[in-house]
Image (cartoon, rainbow, N blue to C red; front, side):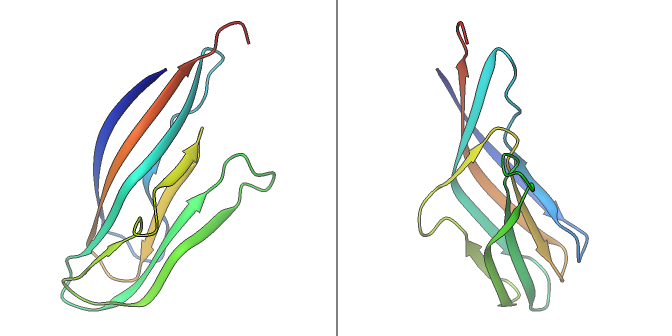
Length: 122
């Protein structure tokens, strides 16, 4: 098993559509992937307040569900939201974290522990 620590910074410059912050690598016939999002912080760098949604895309669900894990209609200018206040987020192969806001630009920072495990004889 190998562990790789990554930081990801994303600028969201569109409104009304989901923007992917991070996607866990897809498992292959040789390597299984998982990721733990230790920190996910969203910064409102605009001059005004807006609405913010943070969504989890579950690629293993039969209907490929996108689940809202956080939402606020009062994302004030110059403030931050920490989506991992209640604990880390676990992603399986091809799962993704997405954000949507009706103001832009906003910035997202993610601290990620990516886990890969070689599949021997499976």
